[in-house]
Image (cartoon, rainbow, N blue to C red; front, side, top):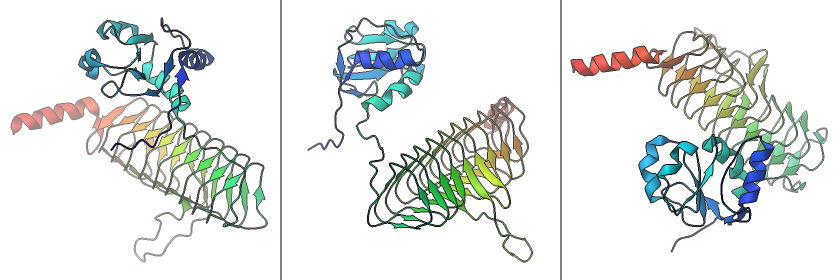
Length: 335
């Protein structure tokens, strides 16, 4: 027996067109506006009621076996689709996928305005309209919770926390000494605002942390990620950033806007990272460094020196990726 826990939500082609037009994206297809799709699926798993997408030429050979009713695709690849699959021609299929994926999702989380009786909330806190707080969560001292905030079960908020409007905080989250800006999503198990790894080396005497964490608007923090509060000022994450699961961000780190940081990355204290930076999984970044704008750090890299703008680095110690590739080739020839 196959269990399906997802509720199907039918979407018309006109719904997709409307979203793209609102985002000033061009789309062309001969599909009727009232044509219905049940889901979005990958090329290999789609059926004749589904919408699929093609964005990676690596899977070009898979197109001939696609079973989807229609496929989001660039014009240059339409010739590879079978006649049974209708092309929906767009400039960037993956961007379109990101924009329309929400309308197929029947599991949207929104505040219902109900605060469970099984919560503990300090009476001096400020709780704005339409806030949902689920059972067994605690809101400690000196907290402000903005409009339309959702807080899951078993979460601990406070002390000294400001959560702005439309923030979603999942179960088992701990936040203290932090400001969370509008529209952020904090996944289960995240730990934000705790004391960092700071002490005097000889005596091991702990350094008291009195700073905070600031997370910019529209940013997502993954499950079991830890972000330490600053010693004096702020540990900051910029706007529109995506931090994956199991990431460690140490005290006094500054990360710019639109960052993408994959799982198991570790960033040591007081490092300053620019805008539009991408960091691959399991990379490590030493402390007190400056990483420029538009930098890409390959997975499992070890960054020990500053990196200027627009560089792509890999390896340990991390270096220009072209130099790293040459070294890999030379070493493989020697073997």
